[in-house]
Length: 379
Ligand SMILES: *Cc1c(COP(=O)(O)O)cnc(C)c1O
Image (cartoon, rainbow, N blue to C red; front, side, top):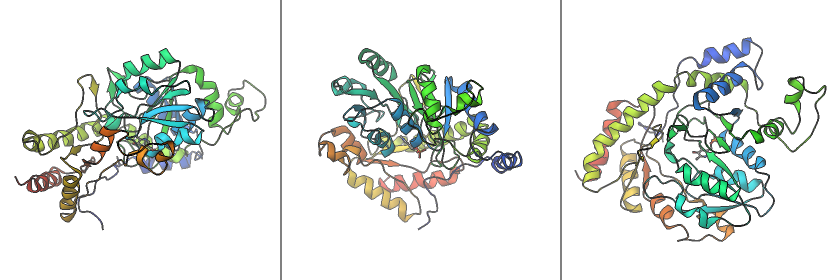
């Protein structure tokens, strides 16, 4: 059934077709044409990233990051269980065992105070996920990584144009990855990046991205023919997707501002329910600047969450829950996790509901959502 007020509608700036046409007219439709390069340069300059490699998806970016971590079978990677499946899958495909850490009750980000205890001799990387575009506590995580000699890979899929102590998410760890999937703030249908902040990883990254060849060196005239030198794949987006994305990145701030207004309106209208203890909205620490990716509420129980979701559905409003904790998935249980392993993840994931959130959501539609929630709460 189509929802009258869906959970998401991808934003379109109006320039996308023009830019795609330009790429076609220029005869550049494969990777690394002027739009691919333009998007990468824009992201590097705007967010202070040493090198951005445009990717077909954030999943691809994470998969490349996992290859760059040079994992051997049985190596371990520390990450939250409360995340999208790609965070774990990328490293599992590369042979690693995911070590899941519980989340903080305020931000729902990986609890940095639990990370040291998750280390073993086999730990090779830490993967903080910036949930809802609110930063993980990066300083202690970077300190731990340095002390133990492991890499930090930021899953910044939701974190484009969000900041931790004035540093852009995705620019802080050795590696980072953004998503431009059509559920995110800035979209190209499918799309993403691998951000390289640790320059020691750059040369190998170029090779892995180009099918394991040294073709980039060849393009720069540094060698006279290129050949197969390492493992690799085709981690290249089509130029057409980057042409589309360019039109979105030009609207970086207007998109943020509209999302901020929607976020604040939800917070204002639901404040009485928050005060009376019916629900709780997002929390953002003072030193984190969010990008208004998501507005979620936490109900008292799973039953209340399901009741509200169904009440909204009856009114044509789509509200969605996530994530099924990875440690309790059929895959996650293979590593010995069971119910109760990560109590805060299990509790909060069962009570969380995401409200409709997209650029074009009107005030009236938003009021309908809020009225329906207030009605459900018996107010
Ligand atoms: C969306 C998302 C991804 C995957 O992004 P794709 O671009 O769809 O591959 C990975 N991690 C998190 C936390 C996400 O929200």
